[in-house]
Image 1: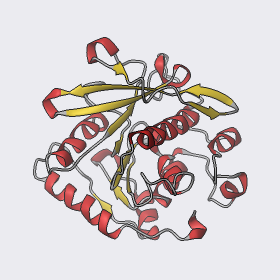
Image 2: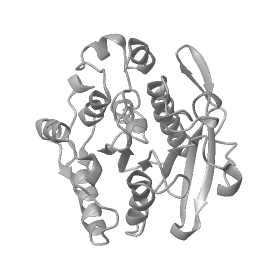
Image 3: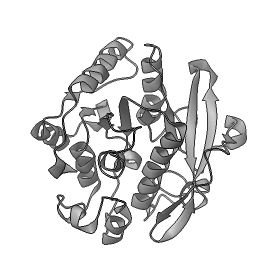
Length: 275
């Protein structure tokens, strides 16, 4: 399963969108079954991209900041890759809003809450699909809280009980102030105020990436996202590191799938104290 931040052609070509586009294709070409998710950013033209709503998956309300936010699921296909993409949509967080920054170049102050909605929206949708992914690849800041939710609030769900998680940092360098309100909104099921207080401080984007690694089984790097502090933290946690991975290198895809397979067979075991 690929929980991506950007996918080309729905967003302009970039290292992030090309990774989101090529990585699932590489895995699918090896005969593996895939599911791909991304946010329905406001800049995506639904008519041109032929998005349509999946009624049977839409309609759930996710409560964030004591407010109901309607989860809308849309789908489209990339025929050249024989790949289907599920889009997570919501009027408040995505429908009329761009990615990390608005039209004036200002960072959205609720990006943390948008990441929470995206993570929970994807996981609730997979539950409805009754699909069981072996490997879950999370890409970028928008997916960074997903590993935490999988290993805590959703740890007993059949869809995720045995999943291994690989994280890839990607995208803009955000200020992403993780306020007390963000921490309050992060609470869900077993993620209590007491639990969050036991974690290292969450204040910056790098802190959020470290949180993702804390609940991941592997770190996959791209050329523009090699962060030595993050690599050192992965080694400290005993997590394998792969990359930097260049999607333009045709030979790299074979090695990439081998890495995914090795993470599946050797994923770290979480202690109850971690959960």
